[in-house]
Image (cartoon, rainbow over all chains, first blue to last red; front, side):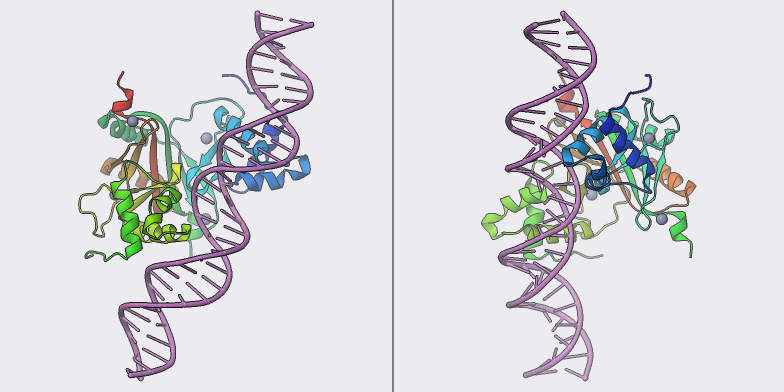
Length: 134
Length: 134
DNA sequence: GCAATTGATGTAATAACATTACGTCAATTT
DNA sequence: AAATTGACGTAATGTTATTACATCAATTGC
Ligand SMILES: [Zn+2]
Ligand SMILES: [Zn+2]
Ligand SMILES: [Zn+2]
Ligand SMILES: [Zn+2]
């Protein structure tokens, strides 16, 4: 699919996420965008919903927050397949990972249960290389 | 480790989860236990924290709720390894799955990033066999 | 036995996260 | 031009989780 034209609010929210060091909660985004006219949570949540739909951002379920997609051809629609995230509990850094072998195992697991997968969440909490070094 | 003696509140919460059809939110548990003297969220959250620690229940991050562990030797401490959940969005049924191949892939993924894993969340949202049949 | 510590509990208040409801407006379609 | 659609603004409310403080019971050390 072609480039997605974003509305002003959507662009502001995406921008906030892309320039952030790590994942942001919806309310943190709201605070960052008050100077740009944001006043209510719904302005953020509506933009987030669309950006999720476009595949430009991801939601981290285990921490109720959001990150910009690390995929290089951002600002385009594309299929992610299954995405796994490594989340450092010390510094907050998030690494987005894709792995065909992982997808295959999950596909088999779901198939065993005759389960029709719509969306898969994989989040690894722990400590990144930097924060592990003594 | 041996059998864990549970406090009254912990037993009540575990019981509520074991007798539930599907996952329950903390506040739903609170409502179910009002007749047993529960008055405040903290009574539930404290019990949930301990039950999670003992490995007797699981938290489903993608729906902010909790399920009793499906592992047969429940009421004992045991290591789960990595657990994946298939969550039906139609009927709410949750299936707990374990798979060595999946653990291996996750281990490799984390290893590639020199990431030290503490806890892994895998949740598959979709439709179970019953809810898929026409 | 008794003081000190530890762990569980009760209660209230507050914080953090998310949605519903309602009205307006601009662009697109018919 | 009317109808439809999609984005937006605002207020109110609903849901999930934590902080703070006081009390009580069981255990530990002397
Ligand atoms: Zn991505
Ligand atoms: Zn780190
Ligand atoms: Zn289990
Ligand atoms: Zn189902």
